[in-house]
Length: 315
Length: 290
Image 1 (cartoon, rainbow over the protein chains, first blue to last red):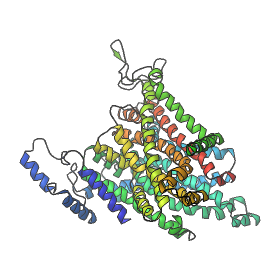
Image 2 (cartoon, one colour; image 1 turned 135 degrees about the vertical axis):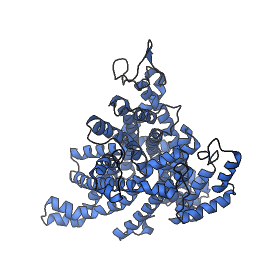
Image 3 (tube, each protein chain N blue to C red; image 1 turned 45 degrees about the vertical axis):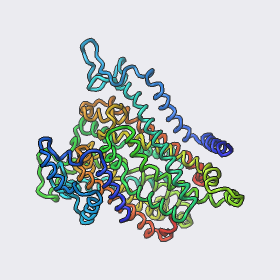
């Protein structure tokens, strides 16, 4: 896991350093004299040899130090820290929506196996997986926000609102009003995985002897489905959720942009388009870090929840 | 020759068996046809700001003259949609090609040689899985410059990972079969065994992952263009969506502008899924019975 992060950080370092042009272009004002530019280069350590910069970069990264943003003129850690909570709220709500609806619909579709409704359900699910997320977001915006005026068209709070603390924000209804559409869009995208996984697991589990046994004991179909089959079919879906968090981090980039949601993904887009190298680097490393950790958690959960599977066997 | 014949027979057999896969292929053929015939199908030049007399045709709703209306700059939306099939297919097929070649090679070599080579290659694959896809493409394209080939390259650098994993595990089983053993005993070289004996058996699988990659690549190009990192010279479906978004088509309720390009992207991705779903039943016949 640490090896993976190290390789990703190294790739990133070289992508940013070997780019054409001086990384300070965005920072340097055209009116700066040659001398002032040299002083700046020194300040950022860009006059040192590449290998030296690389070790400084790794050392700082290890200490959680990501440098200063060119654009915001503030430390990258601060800039990211300000928007990260918004991304987390968005992710949590959409994961909650996606996994609740997904698991229940998966059970339902497994129940209706072979009926018309099953085909319709699966085709609909494929639609949600294939539709570009930002396009779904655009439609929701055009319909619910512009046509019917039910939801705000973007941002995380009404213009001019200042929250005294994170708690006050979380307690304000206006915040949830803003959060709903982006979370729904992300949830629609995430829904497919738990739904299809739950359905196919249910179909597998329902062939097991203990499920037959339960139905032979005369228990109702509902009881057998929920109490006996669904419980076991849930396990892999829980594991998949860890991977889902990783996906959600990546998917955030487009959705946050559509809804002008002040989160990590939108920050990354902004950093790249303003050539803010340190900020783009920091945001990317954080997103990659979450993905790597979640992949690892998924592997762990897999073997903990189902002792029949060891990490060795999966290879 | 024998190998090629076998591959062709395998692929065509799988299409005959499966309605889903056929639908997927038909969708791709449909887009291909539109891309080729674009100059004849599109009533206007997609870049042209259309005017009648001295009057520019801004923001026209759909009517007889403009099937899907015009943009806020007076460009014909239907013509843009038709021409959008070209970059979509260029991106889709070229990314899929790289993905298939790279993923198949990595999978073949890792699966055949096993041991240290396998460990190294699979570790690299794990790392590729740790890199977030869309952010990576954005960062690379953002700094390398917005061109369609940079987008393809950025996608190809990561997308091979799924193919490599699946091909490897398939190779691991194929290499244990009797005819491989026979080839080895009769003195065939490693390269000969890999490319003449093993490769034909896993080619349908790499075609399958290639077709999925076409869909993902088109979807990603749309997302990257939407975020404003697309090739400014090229009118793609993603560019149209970006154009509609920044020109306030949403608040004006110009659904005729931003619905059609999204549907095209969705169809392209669905086609990949359909081919995938169809072939799943052939690759794992067990699934058919339950």
